[in-house]
Amino acid sequence: MKEKTNGGYLSGKEIRAIARENAKQIKKLEAYKNRRAEEREYLSEMKNPENILEIEDLHTFFYTEQGVVKAVNGVSYDVPKNAVVGIVGESGCGKSVTSMSVMRLIQGPAGQIVDGSIRFKSVDYKRDVKGNPVTDETGEYLTEEKVYDIAKMPIREIHKIRGKQIAMIFQEPMTSLNPVFTIGQQLDEVTLLHQPGATKQSAKEKSEEMLRLVGIIPENVYNAFPHELSGGMRQRVMIAMALAAEPRLIIADEPTTALDVTIQAQILDLLQDIKNKIDGSILLITHDLGVIAEMADYVVVMYAGKVIEKGTVYEIFQEPKHPYTIGLQKSKPTMTLDDSTELYNIPGNVPNPINMPKHCYFKERCAMCTNKCSGDYPGMVQLSPTHFVACHLYEEGNCNG
Ligand SMILES: Nc1ncnc2c1ncn2[C@@H]1O[C@H](COP(=O)(O)OP(=O)(O)OP(=O)(O)O)[C@@H](O)[C@H]1O
Ligand code: SF4
Ligand SMILES: [Mg+2]
Image (cartoon, rainbow, N blue to C red):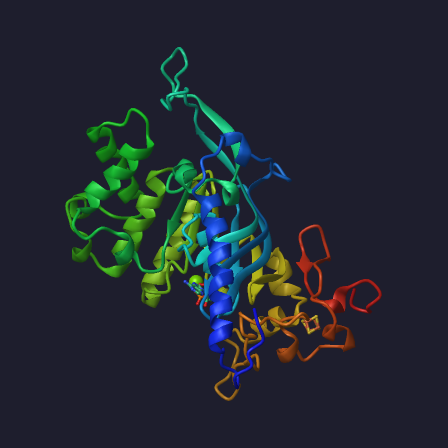
């Protein structure tokens, strides 16, 4: 990104230079995304077999007219099997872009995964060379385990995992449901698409079972259209749809933000319930620290496109180390605050995502910063087998380290 000279505005020459560079990068990345590749090119191995998802050094950028927005700039975190991982951080810090990268739903050509790995442990039906599922002598469908690097998958192969093995629950269910089909039709479609040997009748039975699982009486809803349902009901239907494919990972991005408080509590109870029933993991993105404290086993704190701290829910809530995480905890309302106590507010703003500094991105807002903080961006320091923080205060040789 070129220096802005014209009183903070870009000159015509600078705009043309950015456009040329963007076009070059996009062409290369689009060709990679749309290539045909043998499966072995995007098969990988998990670093830890106990994980279902390992995101490593992920970079997802947006090539805009103003320059490159490094929305996700070297993010690494893991999702262990049967765990809930909560992602928190200020608006615009890259939580959704990271999860959309996992689903390969980043809107091209401007948005692109530029670098890094997204390893996912897939268990799917074993297929013959023609792509038909294979059965054993008793007629049971055989399954096989593979690790895919989703970041390297050609986009045409993404159907192997999207929707089936990784399902997503969005903030606004109305935009994810098709208004012209009934709930039953949309739910049946999931089973018919993903379950080999499924018939119309077996798909309907599965849909009804899923509706019951999310607390809906199927007779009232199966033949209804999305607009006939309340927001809370639609979100339940979305969860039922996500579950119908029997995914191994559910990504819930602000699943309750659009709902009123009582319905929020019901949906969260439902997710908690489902967590215990399914043999899978949940990646939960929310602004609400209370929700994270209640539901998550592990927490990842993001700031300006990077992970700044991660650990178990106990480590992040009881022993937060990064000055930003400490500030987040202080800015959380509690029942013990009396009316005269003002909520703590972290001063300042996130730096411009196009012109990120070389030093720690939190420096301008940090009350604990030292001389070292004007140097390079801090590396990840390991504090326990599960607790990591990116802050100079905890590096070896510092009293807090
Ligand atoms: N299509 C786009 N074009 C340009 N920049 C984008 C685009 N989509 C997202 N961004 C930028 O990427 C950054 C991360 O956005 P993201 O949606 O991941 O934030 P978030 O952490 O999910 O925030 P919120 O809590 O508000 O949902 C932001 O700076 C945003 O402006
Ligand atoms: S590295 Fe320095 S500026 Fe950044 S959070 Fe730590 S103490 Fe604050
Ligand atoms: Mg978001």
